Length: 316
Length: 239
Ligand SMILES: Nc1ncnc2c1ncn2[C@@H]1O[C@H](COP(=O)(O)OP(=O)(O)OP(=O)(O)O)[C@@H](O)[C@H]1O
Ligand SMILES: [Mg+2]
Image 1 (cartoon, rainbow over the protein chains, first blue to last red):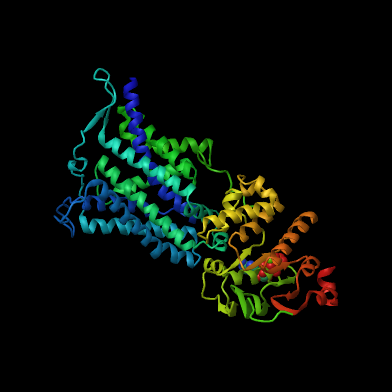
Image 2: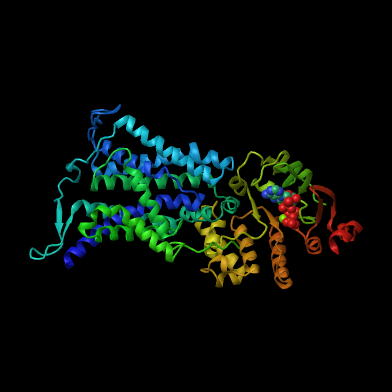
């Protein structure tokens, strides 16, 4: 493989890998606080993509209640991205209030909660289909208005061409990763989040309103999920209501690979899988989605706790 | 000995864990500035009493008043904001966070960053060992250091009432003396203390009054001096 091709694939891998990373953080944040995988996360990812799509003023297709509908205005892409993610975050909040909190209050078994979140995922997917049908949607090319379709980082003789879309999604996800890491490690609220993740009863004895922080966690989780949904939709297409389900499985591979509940682990896992997928020779590209699970399988044989996972949390 | 309005008052407090009755018709009063101790054998319901005050378990019946205001409708975080800090049984420091993070979390309810910085300094002066271990993960501290951290963390909220659950548990006598000396200082600085102890001698030396809890009920209460020479207390708790 030529060096420039390798570099090109590394950049592409890093770019999609950081999208995997922010998506996986959505799982990880909830897992580290409640010890539960929120299977509705993939559906929230899908919703984020549709919200942004609608907010850019793009038109829906021929099926569903919203057939041929279109907002009377169109937001610039970046604004639509964040507003769409905010709406996805609110869906996350709704899922917590309607499902997770009542089950928690009844002391439900985590397995029950997990299965219920799967139920919510199915319900959300069907709702999406009811409203906008099962068509494939592409963001209009005008969303990246003014930008050239690709950038050459090499020389005319030895080109190192990267699609602008890849750069855009990579930069946005990296910025979100940095901001989220700063928030969790450097702010008062982030410190309280870490405290609730470690011991929620003790946190409430310190004056932390744990339910409110859990709500915030669901918002952040939905927000990053929504961002990831839009970015993947932009990079490829929005493949229909089931868009987020396959992606959701890959997200699970990412968090298990990195170490369940481990934030740097989710980031590392996302980037490893993103790069590995892109280094795949073109003859094997049909197996791209299997790569995540192949890596997961091998790593777990050697390190059952994942790349950065703790073997066993020591309770003092 | 103390008159005026009680700082804390439990009336007819009853608590259940599922079908098990853990507390039955508890009456207890703490006046401002006092040190009051609650002594009793394992399983008597001492920790349960403190948990009920902090609202991390529900009361089935009765009333809990703090400065005359009912706590029963409050969430645990609100109780802290009202001025009650609880040092739980087994210390419960946040093991995966640094000593400093633990202390700052103790001040979570406060917004005055200058005051918080002052208080942090004050805790480090009170417990110099915590200063040396400021960046260390709390889970790597020794038992005694963790107890110091748990107390210092509670003080960071500037409580008016401190609930302490067995601060002497599992600690060497010299560390216990150190911690109790600190508690005395705190009390003379105006912090009211409700102290749960199995080490009754220690508790009665420090407290002005005591309550004896047996199988979920208050058996009797008196001044600490009288309890110290009470035959029933001597037999059961002073060994
Ligand atoms: N979570 C719980 N579920 C069921 N029963 C409980 C629970 N916690 C405490 N109990 C029971 O309630 C009673 C009082 O317990 P509590 O912890 O208040 O005792 P204690 O006086 O603090 O004892 P110790 O000195 O051993 O700490 C005990 O019989 C105990 O078994
Ligand atoms: Mg106890």
